[in-house]
Length: 255
Image 1: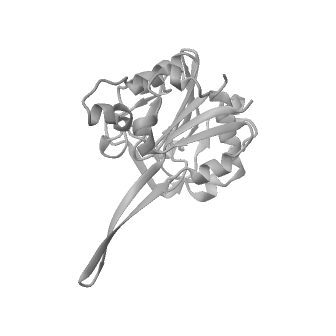
Image 2: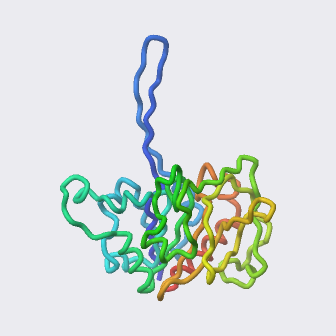
Image 3: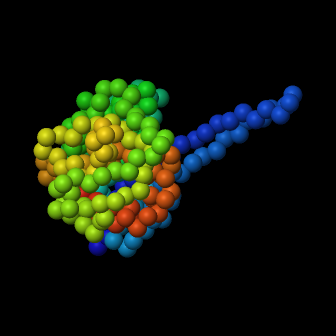
């Protein structure tokens, strides 16, 4: 039976003003940042639900029981406010379940969770993603910094595998040589977590892929993106990326 995966986030809307001499007009475009990621990972073994950021504000499951229909949840570039402030709270001033606590309880009961890096992941740009000291951080295998945690690497840095990575099932069938990335969120691996990929020591040795457990569940932090701009298309389309993510999803979604 296919593993059911909820991917929440990885979308945005852009506005622009076009000025041509004396004349100007606005335009609005919507972007689905995970489409290429999902094409690369397409496989009968996984059944993805892609919930865009604006959809997740209202439709993201509000209890651990509702989340339990999924074998794993991926949070990608979706800030804590989107989950904490559904329309019932933000517009109608009504009480509503804390969905960060629901995610925590879902993991502790045996669910899988992956947080993917980005401008609105971990602590994010200007510290605005706001997952530091939340129930989500409590079950992730990393500690989140209290400040803008982006590390931009425009020169491109190739990650390296840890000494024990080869023995971990997530790294099965992978070469230690991987393409470059252009940025990550800075995190600190928790003492009992497994750091499988990181930046080279001369670049700070910051974690790229960390796996761990919380209660009955398994969690992972992938601190770069799953699409532009931090993850170049060459990496996304490399066979190693598909293998790595199939392994990772299979490991996290063990139920």
